[in-house]
Image: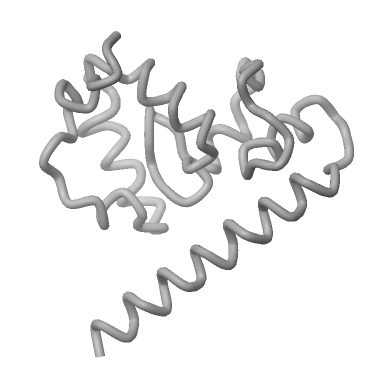
Length: 124
């Protein structure tokens, strides 16, 4: 798969705001409409796990809820401590969170809060 796999994604050209919607019905619709038949789903899922962005977005047939509930989900070796995805690697390994992962999760939460505040301000 080339590094430009995005060009072949089923969701190419779709508004990015749709993928950050926290509504579970919207997420389920995205998973069945785009992810289920996407030809580059594996590459998308791998990048999503590496970046940890499935915590606040739908990507690679993953959401925060379904990634945490997948019994077969094993943290890929490229997930490192100090990233939001590191939290789930620790969780699935039955380990307590390390300090760098706690800081990364807090940073991601702050960023998500900031983005939502910006959206709210632009909608007013």
